[in-house]
Image (spheres, rainbow, N blue to C red):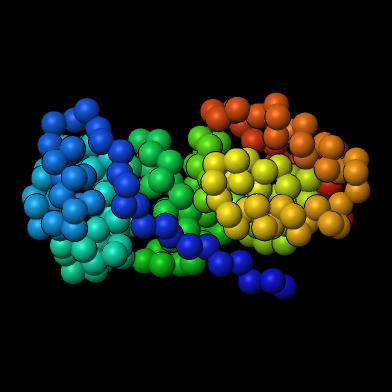
Amino acid sequence: MKRIMIAIVAVFGLHVSAHAGFAEGATAYNARNYPLALKEITPLAKAGNAEAQHLLGLMYYMGRGVVRDYKQAFMWHHKAAQQGKADAQYVVGAMYYTGNAVLQDQKQAVTWFRKAAEQGHAEAQHALGLMYRYHVAGMPQDVVIAYMLWNLAAANGNANATEQRAAVSRQMTNEQIEEAQALSRNWKPGMPLPTASRTGGNS
């Protein structure tokens, strides 16, 4: 069985939030002034700001401005993920998938990847596509859904998804590719993703 590598992508170009203090913290983080970032971000994260929780989680995950601590990283990302922060949902999914700081739980991984993917998160779409393509984490094998997810991720700039889509397309019928393209065209961020296709199962 092909091993799936799920990477956690470090965020450098953080979006500036309207919340007071977050802009300063994000700017400091992007400038690699981690002590200042930590000072600005921590109170906001404790007050429930999802953007700050995600950034603080990244700092703990990467060991930037703090001692690396995956349990703290998971805790802060999980708080942000519960508030709907797609980047944090992806990280939570990846940590469940690899069993990093939590008990490995592939069903939880799929749940969090799907939540992020349904918001248009390219890395989560790519990861979910791998699970459909290679029939892992309890997912049914479905090349049409995999192609659809990689099509969406590629449109959002994920180069790995572009490569995966090209590879799987060589093993698909024209009917399967047409269905995958139609599913991609008809889907918009915020909509549930399909869990099965008409033509792509068990190929």
